[in-house]
Image (tube, rainbow, N blue to C red; front, side):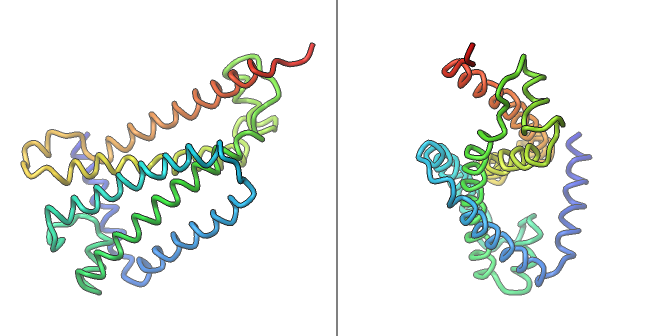
Length: 225
């Protein structure tokens, strides 16, 4: 499993490296534009109970990204053995200092996006909650206020939840980068395998967490008889 996943990852990295510097720079500005756009979207959701948990997620994501960034520089300050194809292209075309700033600012923007997407998830999911449901499966059938179990709105909320919580996965990436013992590194689950498991756990948390929130709120506000 580890070997197959690493071959897949290497193939993806080569594809990314083949995009060239202009598209890689365009990707940075695209992420920045997305962060600005999400800030405009969130202007309508000025509620403390949304911002506080989202801020906590953003802080954790920022810590994970910074640990990954500075941990990488501690192990290889010249990025000579860096596997990230984006950094490699920037180093080759613009130099080491530009690559540092590219990675540093990019990770900050990603942490901001994590904060924004999780805030959007917390704020927007409330309008998708059904008025009533007879159980877990009935809840998800009604979620999104449509007669379809996978409405566009529910897919958007699901993506916002996943993207908001993907940042902490960088803790594992940082740990792998800190391993200088090759045998110890090879014994660890490959990054694609751990990422797949992490996304599966997040999916379960999304399904169970939203249903639990619905049950809790319904208990606080029981339907009129």
